[in-house]
Image (cartoon, rainbow, N blue to C red; front, side, top):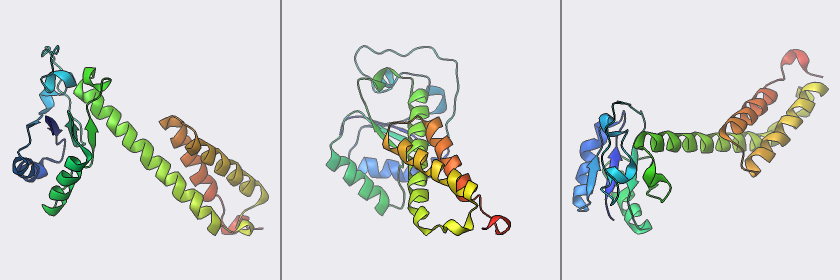
Length: 188
């Protein structure tokens, strides 16, 4: 493993344990504070060609993130195992890329959170799609069942192509609303 940048966000209670594990691995790491989030990733990692820039923004993110300059899968697996054994975890991890090395760290945090939300929504849609086999058509009016079928196929199509977060969210809410559109009063 090369350098690691860690941001704890609102989860500073696990900092001591995470640092203990990283020290056990002789890892080269740096813990970021809110006032550093406006710096470019390359600057924070000390990469050639990057210099600290004056930044007056003081932002805060609630999420945690561990950013690796470079790490093998085995190294990350070992780190995860040791963190779990110590009773904690770092939920979000990222690797340095040619693309994100130029990003401000707070922009990387924002993108990681968007991706996390996106995949949570996709999982939620998959759950609703699986639950469709348990639905009873007779519990729906013809119109509400038709609306459900339409929402079902739109959600299915959405997770099978690269939809935006907004499209995924819309598909999820449409499917959830359509699934719940029956009631005792509108049974056939």
